[in-house]
Length: 368
Image (tube, rainbow, N blue to C red; front, top):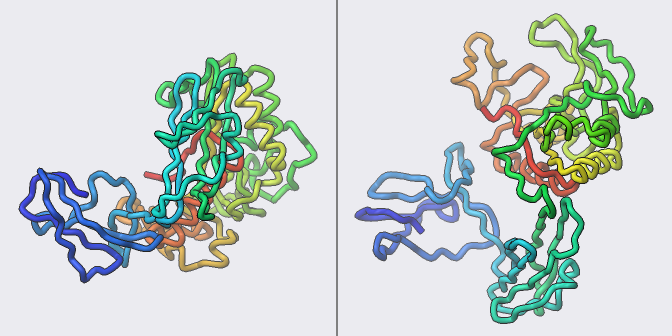
């Protein structure tokens, strides 16, 4: 739908760019029905001859190098859930697929909930839950066997439930340069210039500092940590073209979903996040989505996902004009966000880290 005063509104989309659909006006609300298969589609409104993004849809995607609004179409047969949180209750509402089939039983995560058949809602009491962070993953099927789209519901109980990011006191931790809590994972020297090599800081060290009360005593209630991904081995030339530096900072990723062993194990990362949550501290990871290191699995397997642009800031490569396609260095391929396969994969990877390690937020690198 499109809402606004106009003489005519049309819809065009990737399903058939040549088919211009006339939208019907009802008191300033323009609408049209389109039957589509599951998938992602570019689209735009044509309002009195002017091509416009959907003002009510923040998602964008490129088709043939042109930016459009993005329509995500789910499988209409599959049901889904929505959630709302009251003070002491969690409400999960079931939305049937197009067959109208009811839910088959009760999701395991809601085994203690009561069912309201009039609203198709489970009501789960949160009374008695320990203070801190909790997460429920709602999964199920309908009586026709259609698998519902699952829903992850994170929530907090106790004095830290009222947290808002706008009021957070955030402490940035460059993990390798913080505290060495487990010397057994220290990496070998890479030959980097003095001060530019790995120093041994790790997840275990951050955990120790959380449990010591270091952050709480400062009033910190959120941690922003440098990337967790496996980083490049060896060294690369710094911007001065002289000094060799290592990937201790984490911004030269080589694996999409593997933990950097010089920072610790998966178990140590889980333990660090759990310790933070026990102390009422949120955790956010720095996500590198602008570029990768040249040894990254995606660059090796999908080079078409990346720009082969100039080096940012060099002659004929202005930072502003080439902000979307220039490379920071020759060994850091720049991700082409106009490539839908690339953009969807990087979004999926970010969501995987968030869910797998129970993270609370994200800092997105190089957005500007």
